Amino acid sequence: MTPDRSLPEITVRGVLLGIVLTFLFTAANLYLGLKVGLTFATSIPAAVVSMALLRAFRDANILENNIVQTVASAAGTIASVGFVLPGLIMTGWWTGFPFWMSFSVCAVGGILGVLFSVPLRRALVTGSDLPYPEGVAAAEVLKVGSAGAESAAENRAGLRTIVMGSVAAVGYSLTAAMGLTASAITKWFRIGPVGTGVDFGMQLALVGAGHLVGRAVGLAIGFGVVIGFWVVTPILTFMQHNPEAAELVWAKQVRFFGVGVIGIAAIWTLAMIARPVIGGLLQSIAASRARNAGKTLAIEERDLSVGTMGIGIIAMLGLAGVVLYIFAASGPLAAYALPLSIGGLVYVFVIGVLVSAVCGYMAGLVGSSNSPVSGLGILGVVAAAGLLALFVKPGLPDGANAHLVAFALIATAIVFCAATIANDNLQDLKTGQLVGATPWKQQAALVIGVLAGSAVIPGVLDLLNKAYGFAPLVGTAPAHPLGAPQATLIATLAQGVLGKGLDWTLIGSGAAFGVVLILLDIILKRSGRYGCPPLAVGLGIYLPMGATLPVVIGALIGDWFDRAAKDDETRRRGVLLASGFIVGDGLFGVALAGLIVATGSGSPLALVGESFATPAIFTGALLFAALTVLTYRRTLRPGG
Image 1: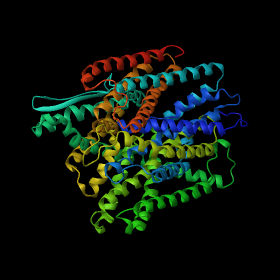
Image 2: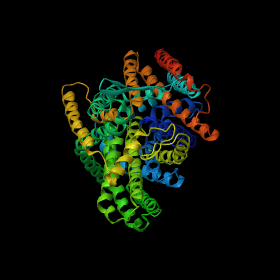
Image 3: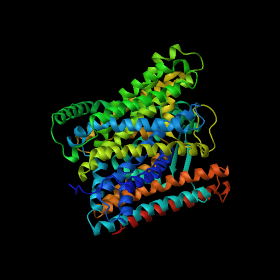
Image 4: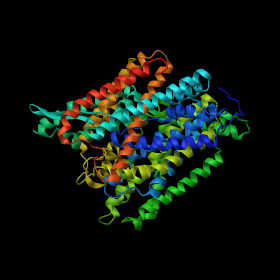
């Protein structure tokens, strides 16, 4: 698609709208990520909202709407830093999230992700046959939205669908906060000599997340739930003659089995994509040489210049070194601050380039939402902690280990931000390629989105910490902590590698099972059937059932909806409904956190006491089912 080049692309109103959407979606994604360990892609919802709102201006166009979704897409990825930074609270190093340190970690890492992935565009976007599912979907939404009067009606219907999903999610969460409905159905029990349990979180956001990840990933997560809760947990409770302690056995032992599965799956992923990534880099270098030879490039082929990219990388690495130095100088590691910051900088550059390439490739292969950035984060923190354990820890004084763990987490957070934004950048550039956008303008817009998301992250994390808190790795947990499953895992690994000890037997057993899953995935794919993504199975084992079982149900509902839908417009509205569920739940969670902090009450909206807990399960199950059925049936109707 070649649009009229007289059309404005980057506009003040478009950038401002993108920033506002980034604020909202980042807050929602942080809450969802800390609640269940998943985040959602924000490009399509942002594109729909942009087209609906900017239609009021006669000169609004597809390129401007594309810039809005590019800015706001950062919210779907930069919020993943919530998988790492809360670990500093859990290990006891931080008591809150200092603004400038938290902002700098996110901004520096995110901008490095943009810059690291610029040379990959030609190799992995224009010069490959990778499907980029979310990038293509966003482009289709933008094309439909610019097609005329008929698309105006579709835009309005799409916006209504997002609002309906958000209102339904807020409505249920509000009744749960009042105590009138239950937020989950949980029961741990024994069956003869073994123990197990059932846990179902009643949050529409989880159903929406399942719809977005799709049937294949949803079923793989469901398989992990079966393995973790109904196979490994009963076996371990039987072996330990302790069926009454099923919940404790899962939390303290089975999750490490899941860590082994996730770790081996992440390594396998890296091995499988190493050759395509290296080939893509070589193609990118060849294309750069051709440009330098004087070849005129079309507007659609103009990236940030090599000089701009080089200066930007040098500047960001310099700032990363400053951040690492300041962090290392603020405690027992002060005497080692300079060598630590230099070593940390080398780690950020080398590992950052590697994971940016890997995540960019994975975004093209399976989409940003399904890209295994959490698995790469796990490998990243193990690498950082392992290097520190080998070369730094032996010469440290007593009492410095906690600071060393925190330093490993900070370095990993920078790399993690680079990986997630690189993951997002190539997806955006695929959308831009399909609608005729200018690459360098999109890359600049994503930098704006990174800065906007980074600015809101410290405040939201601080608010959630004050309202709910995070369970410490050692000590007493708050009354109702956010689960933060990914952050707990990464912090636990950092502590374990640096001396607190890990259950390597269970991790090894999980890795062995992961090898079996990899072989099963290969066999299924070669037979022409759906695969069994081993990383998704590992997440099903590791994450709480209350967070994963609704995702599985949501994936099945989404699959049914797509088959029941009569056209692509209706299927797109299904995606928007799922996004609305997540946005509504996420924003309500953040708003409730503010109310908790303001009132000092853990249940500021409660209308009934604990005596209503049992009736609340029944009223909750009925209302939850009714809202799910009614909203999906409404979305299936022609015109939404």
